Length: 124
Image 1 (cartoon, rainbow, N blue to C red):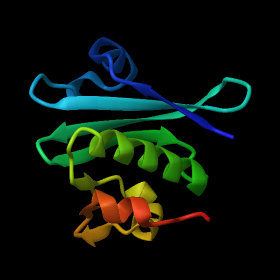
Image 2: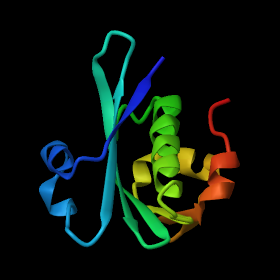
Image 3: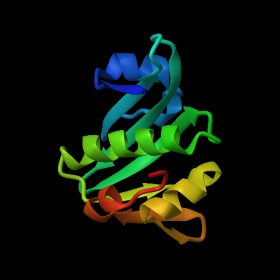
Image 4: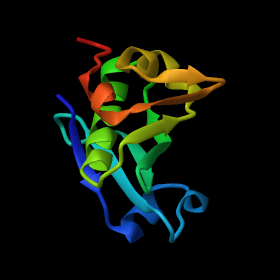
């Protein structure tokens, strides 16, 4: 079982992720995944700009589809709780998971409305 712990403190986010992704005009949230022994298994960064949110960064074993789906769902929930409605992602390495969740591919930019995406399933 993986536990996805939120990170919302901006200084902690800056220490965990590439600093040039962080700015002062958007809301940022992150998640760190831990296995049952407490070892980190990955992390993700989401950015909220008005009603839009973006997955700017996901680091984990992309071959573990359930792990990727967990990070996506955690980020989507974070964003929807902050009034985001649309989500975008350009991380091509997870395109299969994005597509199964309901993201539409438009020339490498995957997008969808969050209520529909949260209904989708990749790995069940």
